[in-house]
Image 1 (cartoon, rainbow, N blue to C red):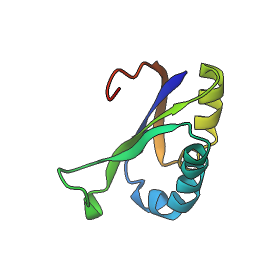
Image 2: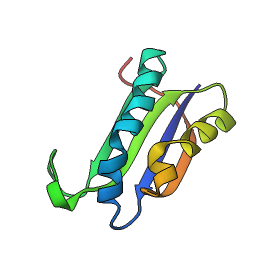
Image 3: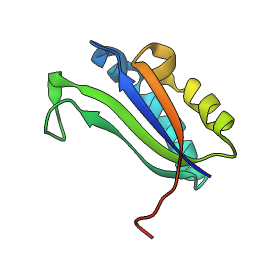
Image 4: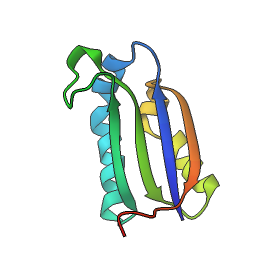
Length: 100
């Protein structure tokens, strides 16, 4: 089943995000290589694909996991979560309707 992992950044966490990004991307690439990643990306803090010093307000990951518990466990081990980039992480079942 698909799950949406909605993450909210802690205030002032941009330096942590930048330092931890390679490890975070490595885990997402593993999901992609397994054919389980639907989409992933950050929420820019301003209306720009490159927000610079404004940074990001969080991230969204939609991926396939065997269960809610498995999705929550995966999210809990994310390098951003472990480094303190995220202030809050919500994991919910997700039903994809589009694109078909």
